[in-house]
Image (tube, rainbow, N blue to C red):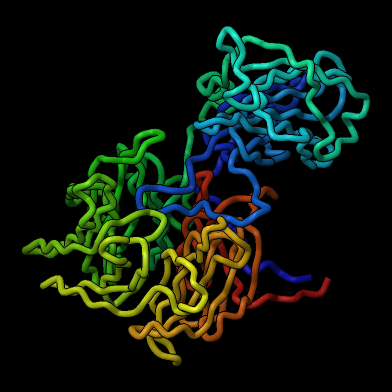
Length: 541
């Protein structure tokens, strides 16, 4: 057999119901031995970056998990493409019906009806056409009563209700097939049912697990030389985990979410960026930057940016803020160089989270993406901003193959200097107006500072994080995959989909955590402490 290239030794921040994020709706099996929970994760983006781009077929973002009530073990985990509205266990068979859907904000109500087989873990989408499912009731073993949303705004009926009721009677629920259900034309107008009650769902979870508290979206992790791991997530600017600790040694709480962590040279302090968010709207609040003592978590200093911003750093500890605001005043896209005795401001053009993120570990310069003045998203170039004067040096175009005629976006990366010379390895995507396509995500090694491409690795899903050492590049993708590449030629040494307890997770952040170790932060709020074999190991069975 082949040993996986990464073995998860510890799962930090783990606990019951961690798979589902924030509870949204629950259901209990007739014999009370199982509880199903539909949850909600944060969107795969923040004010500095979006990491949700994947080509089809794509798994959903909204989780459903089935737990055993006796020990709270997660038995099944699945996802849907829409928010989960209703759950119903079959009265006699090992089946769970899952209703999901939402209004698209402009015209359509879309969703799906899933059937999860509790004996196999298989999930089937039953409806022939997408419909928002708002309520599910098993009237008897053969009859499923549904309340659906109207298909679109044109179908709204008198009285203002947007719901329709129907019943489906079958004797083959245990033999489901994709698209086997066609909603009957005899749907009857129905009063809009109450929507999910997240507070009641959270109470149901706490009754089974009194110590439960939500953890969501670990956007940044870092490893220290002594084996400790740092993490930042919602409500926590920074937390520190010792090598053998079951709980964080300390936490720096935040009024928003911790998004970036830069460890200072020497490893004594770290700089963290947090941001308060507004549900469903672009954030306008200024970002907050704090310097933290890594011995005990004391906040040494606090700086408020002028606008929402991201941090950019270089290997010697110099750093800058780049404004990410979307108001008219932010069009200049100011870069603020933070120095001990002065602050220098330069303009690079407007920033947007889909185009301009360019976070390069260990970089010898402060690196940014800069587009055309009138179209800042177009013809982007990698530029360095020098300290202390703030001189802007254009280095090379982000696009290394102009003949393809695509539009490239930035990503994350790392600087390295090996026998092939200085280089940056960075991620990104190629866009051509037709949405995410297979092979349009990439990892590329480029000579520094010329930008000449040495090798390119392509993928179907967006890269979320990258780190590198002298021999290998470690990359996570929002498909759940961890890929290890050789720095010399980009050959994939190993590929694996990350799983915790047998269930898939989505990695958002990654960092080397010492020799042969990686720390990986996940969308559901956990941190994976992994041991890495850099080449596949074959063992006799």
